[in-house]
Amino acid sequence: MNNEVIRLEDVWVKYGDLTVLEEINLSVQNLDFLGIIGPNGGGKTTLLKVILGLIKPARGKVKVLGASPEKSRRFVGYVPQITQFDREFPVAVLDVVLMGRLGRKGFLGKYTDEDKKVAYEALESVEMLEFKDRQVGKLSGGQLQRVLLARALAADPRILLLDEPTASVDEPTKTELYELLKNLNRKITIILVSHDIGVISSHVDKIACLNKRLFYHGSKEIERETIEKTYQCPIDLIAHGVPHRVLRKHKKE
Amino acid sequence: MRNALTAGILASIACGVVGAIVVVKRMTMISGGISHAAFGGIGLGYLLGFDPIFGALMFTIASALSMGIIRERTRLSEDSMIGILWVTGMSLGVIFIGLSPGYAPDLFSYLFGNILTVPFSDLMMIMILDAIILVVVFLFYERFLAISFDEDFATAAGIPVEQVYLVLLSLVALTIIVLIRIVGVILVIAMLTIPATIAWQFSYKLKQIMAISFLLSAIFTTEGLWLSYLFNLASGATIVLVSVATFILSLILKKSSLINK
Image (tube, rainbow over all chains, first blue to last red; front, side):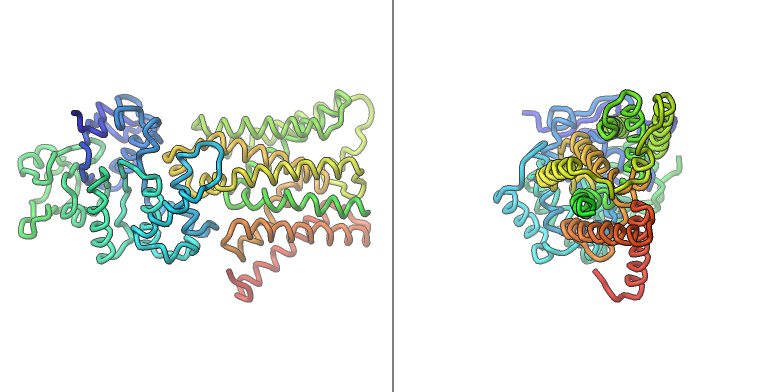
């Protein structure tokens, strides 16, 4: 039985003449918890958008749950970066979470009681139910992050994609968020991208590095030789969840 | 005069509801483009001898749909496309009117509005358009909110974003037709944006912003009408200036924190 939920084969993405992603090969198994790290501008958000079908690769094949990204959208939850939001936008928390239910409705149709129930549950699971009537602009970064997570969960996804979920969130909230994701991971495949390597590495099961090219190690125990050969992210130190082990500086390309 | 007052209040319904979406989705410029494109249709009406407002309706809908499709399917700069649409409509209008035999009556009122001479048949038209707009907004409210708040998520979630956006643009086109009577193609964006912009300063709820914009718009048209009648001024421009003055006042109120969200 094939356990693969996402497969990218030789994927290239270009913005005009600029190559953003180069020869990406990736295979994600069901219930993986994959962290993708890399510098800003390394193509992390672009990679997520390729998996979501928001960006068409110039070359290569993308399969999500055995079909095209567009066809599988209903099963993929997306948690974008919170920095992109207009904080003045007039919408309340519950309305945002309900948006997660719209995808399965298509062009017409109002929210049902079932939709509301699911949205309440999603808010409950991220401990934000008491804020359901609050305007999004009045939330802290961590709270908005959790609301966006609830919105993705309201769609009842099989795969969850998170873009920098711990940016602009304080340390205790980060740990809480990872605990939450850990629980969700029992039923949902998770891919998380971040430049915040310190936190990511102690929570995920598998790590890949992305800086235009993807270096996928398969497990988070990266061997030094592999890193020195392949890992070109300009990150100074990485501590792969083992408190006493700090890896050496990466070789520059 | 009574027709004029009724027309102002009826138009405020479309103006408040659609204007609120235009402002929070930041569609002011595209709305400006669509309303100026209407002038091409007005010219065509004069040239071929049918009611210019139907020409305007054809042109606003056509330009709204083509703008929506261009935006969703190409990587052209939306900004420049709006500019091109804007001047194409105006130029076509000028050429068509130039080619029309004789004098173009009421031309000025299509450009700058003339609410004082609104016939009863136009009231009927505005009412029908209002009804269509309210029904469509009711049906699509959640989707309009979703594509305005976060278009990427909406797409990724599987909402048919392009179709929903085209529906929204068509509503903008209909609202522009309603407002052309009141303020004319050139001043339409004032009515679409000023009441909603004021309302947004004081509310965080889209439905509330719609209601407040409707009220403000009704007040502005009534007040503008009254002033224009009193001092014998152009009604459309007076309505717009009343709106602008209120907007400035609202900024001051907001700044001095007398009223807050």
